[in-house]
Image 1: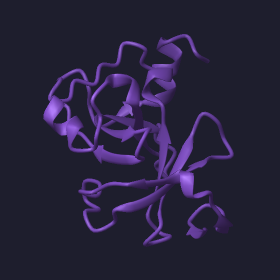
Image 2 (image 1 turned 90 degrees about the vertical axis):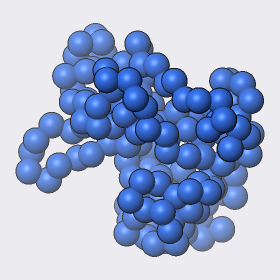
Image 3 (image 1 turned 45 degrees about the vertical axis):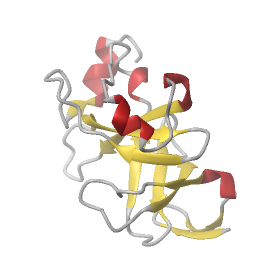
Length: 147
């Protein structure tokens, strides 16, 4: 399938890269269909809306920089997207890259949870006070000994 993307223009994408978010993402409720793309800079990914090429998010695996990260989501929320066991879930954090040179941050309070079997996802909101919407990625990587 062809997808118009913010980062790469019009590209061919495998159907297996499609992810459906039945409730959309926070603030983007009307956009439910996305594709997951590898970013040129690893370890990042793009989550690109297939409905609006201007809606795209940079993602990262939060466990890369926070090995102690815990995603405690009520089972009934996971069942909504067909997750019955933790190994079926893929977790991502949305990354913010400010244009003014401020630190790049990752949202650990609102992770994306994707069912790897049916490629359905949701954005959870965690109540754990350890996880905020802005974790400095470089500082966290340094603290984890990854740089």
